[in-house]
Image (cartoon, rainbow, N blue to C red):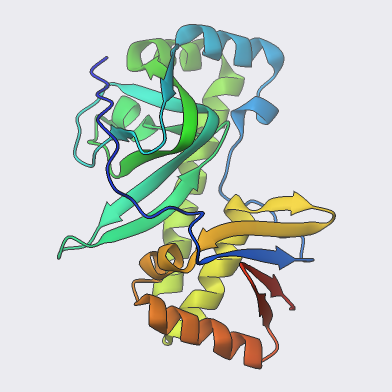
Length: 239
């Protein structure tokens, strides 16, 4: 189906030395992620898995590039895919991470639109390649599956507007605070009642479009205000 897995390229590791961990007692719901493994009934999930082809990926493998014309969707079976955008001057910008159960490529299958972002494997991962014609046929027969895919697209639109809202904040400190909360809600891991997020300060800087030094300063200001508490490779949200 035209899927081209290219060689790994140098990328900033989300688990590098400047990693920190976000811990929060707030029960932030995941507002934009749709996990098809948990949301679809067994019959619908089985039909979906049978319709695709599995492909294993090595860490750093480039799955898709922005602008690719494709006729398939991708379902993450294990691991993560990193969504990347690039600024006009060629700078890398992290968009989000796709996790197990998330699907990508619906705009290409349903709207014949080019791929909007680069997708890069984070760690060894596995995906399911879903040919567009098969996926559309399944959605036409299975209303539950069709509604799940509609929900995916609807929440992606909401996520886009949330991102634009964060970018519109008047200060970097406010952008950092909103972004950390957003990423914790979307990609955090719940442990013992807390929400943990692993991200490097470099990646956070790419999300908010600022230098790592300025992001570090903003984090320390947030700590001084009592909103967060910083430690070695972790950060606790206090409010």
